[in-house]
Amino acid sequence: MALNLSSFGILPPGILTQPTPFSLHVPMRDVHRLSAQVDQANIGIPQYYNTHANPVNGTYGVSRDWLIEAQETWLSDFDWRAHEEEQNKFPNFRINITLPSDGQVFDLHFAALFSQREDAVPITFLHGWPGSWMEFIPVMELLAEKYTADTLPYHVVVPSIPDYGLSVRPEETKELTMAAAGEAINTLMVQLGFGNGYVAQGGDVGSFLSQVLSRHEECKAYHLNMFFMTSRQQASVANLSVTAEEQEKLDYVAAWATTGNAYAVEHGTRPSTISLVLQSNPIAMLAWMGEKFIEWSDNRHSPFPSIDTILSFVSYYWLTNSYARTMWAYSELTSVVGGELPAYNPSLTKPMGYSCFPVEIATLPETWARALFPNLVFYGVHEKGGHFAALQAPEAFLSDIEEFLEIVKNDVIGQS
Image (cartoon, rainbow, N blue to C red):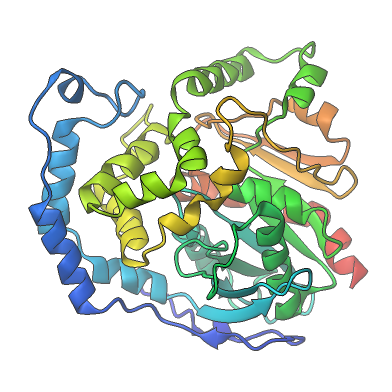
C-alpha cells in the first residue's frame, strides 16, 4: 500500500523563512538526450585489465562486462521517471538562505518529514559523494511506516548538501569551503525554526560537515558513521588495544588507503579536468561512480547495490549537471598528494554518537572512540553494511539513530 506522506509536509511553527514546495521533473528532452548519449557511448575493446577487473575487491576497477551490462540496462530497463516519482513522494522544498558571515547566497533543496509534536527532536541527515539525499529514502520510508505526522518523534531534514544535486549557489564567485557549507546547513536549520537545538548526522562528506556543525551553538549533538583521523589523533591512540574484529576493519582501511584513494587525489588536485572528462560521457561517469558504489558496499553476503540503484545516482548527477560542483570538498580535503587531512576540531563536550559498519573506508574502534571523544554517549557495531549504510542497512542504521536521539533529546529540546 502506498504511503500518504502529505501530512509530513506541514511546516512546524517557528519558521523564519518559508521554503517553497518542490517537485523534480526533468524535461523529457534531457531524459532522451541522456539515453542517446548512453547509446552512442563507446566502450573499449577487451584487454587484460578490463577483463580481469573485480570492482568488489578493488582489483583494477570495474570490468568491461559489468559496464556493458550496465549500459544495456540503462537503455532497456532503467526508468528515470520511476525514480523521480520515488523522490517526489516525500515532501520536497527549496529555500534561499544567505550566510551571515560573508553574504553568500544558497538555493538549497531538502526533503523532510515534519512532525506535529511539540517535543519533536530536529535532525539533519547529511550525505556525501558519490551519494545524494536519496541515500536516506529507505530510512525515511521506515519512519513513515512506523509513525504518523502526529506521532513522529523527530523533525527529519534531508538536504542536498551545498553544491550537490539540486542545491546550488546562484553565483559561484569563489570556491566553497567546509566551513561555509556547514554554515549554510546551520542557517537552513535555523531558518526552519530549529535555532534552539538540532542534531547533525553524517557519513562521507556529511561526516566532516557534521563535525563542523558541532562547533555551531545551535547544533546540540552529532552522530557519525565514518571518521577519518588526523595523524595526531592516530598517534594518540596507537598504543590502545583493539579487538580481532576491529583489526580486520583497520586492515581493510589500510588497504584502501594504499590502493583505493587515487580518485580523491584526482578530485582534489585536478577537479576541473576530471569533471570535464566525466561530464562529456555518461558511461565514463557510470564507470567512475559505479566502481565506488560497488567497492565501498558490503558484498560479502549478497551483491549490492543493484545496477538500477547505481544508475539512479549517476542519472541524478548527470541530469542536475552537478558533478563539477561537488568537487569542492575534495579540493579542501586532498588538495596536496599525500597531504594531511584538515583538523575540523569537532566538539568534545556535546553528545556524540558513532555507528561502526564493517565495510567502511575509515573506521573508529570503540577504544579509540572513547579515548578521542570523552563526549561519546553511543557506540553501535554492526555485522552487515558498508559506506552507504543508510541505503544498504536502513533498519540497523535507523535503530542506532533512534537510540542515540533518545539519549540526547534532553540536550536538544531541553534547552528550548
